Length: 512
Figure (spheres, rainbow, N blue to C red):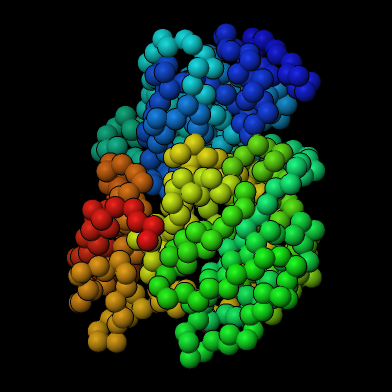
């Protein structure tokens, strides 16, 4: 590809095609993006929706976002884009196995975003060219992409959905399977060197807790030992009156402002929102009550966000082997970490156990959606809601925690009632005015709510198809007749979950 080069004021080389606004490139190069384009105006917005057969509805970027001047998008126009030279060389450019240049660009953007720690970014006005290309991805292109990127199960599922009795689909599938294999050991874009903290940023730390006062005290002690001390800590405790010990909480024990509030509402979403209302700092850190954090934890959150000029990040959450483990165990686990730890890039999830967000963006969303109380998925919903207002959630491998996961206590105490049936069942918030009776909804109605809230109806259809196909296909072959017998009941459970999800959708996002 015949790139031109632009050198930024910081001395970095940017490669580009076409005639972009170089002043805008100068600005973009100071941010978190690595590849930039204006492809929405050029016919690429929401191109290649066949990605749905693999990602379904659990990939935040399956749909491009509307009404934003700048947002993450992997759908790159191969003829008009700019990229950091170091990133292009590290990732190896477009895959020459693809004869279709458009697919090669989509493949490059998809892998950069999802697997390689580089961020492709749409920027309105970077290119003024609005001539629309016709994006054409052939059947063979489609199977080539799937075989090279995913496990073969996904290509088979696509074959089933596109037409299992279609000879052309079979021919293309078999040809792709013969010619290609799934990529292994793809290159990773290394993280930037973290700059020292600039200015005097302030941090509020929110700890929602329930029946875990001892764990909360351990976390507060870790916060006392931070190299960058928080400005404010808000503890929202839902421990019942009969089991709490109010004497354990003494604000005078800490070198920062700490507020202890006894929660009278129910749910972790409401707890976090009550904490958000008390926050006054520039940044908000969200943490679970059952984590331990090393002394550089808060410092690494702020340094990463400042280095990348970003608005939110997830730290690296390390699961403990048991609840008695300490920060020494965390160090050992990090020293022996398997897999690629040093991946920044854009996250595909949000972790309420370890995350940092600029308060202005938290306020813009209004907090957590309390429709999730009693269920699951509130953190993922918060993350994708951030991305939909143009805030990138980065991975932060530098800010680590040890997640103890004790078997008792915590807000899941309320949620466990969702599996109880009969007279002993306690009503969950998502049941609203229709308590569960004879049929327990599965999957969780709040997960189903997220699918209906955040994604398109046709994507829900693929989720439903995959859900039941997986149910029948997994397990031992001799179990299949039993599964088929139980299938009508499983469908009733699924439909009951959809019933509650649609009631929540009709209610709308709520923060109180």
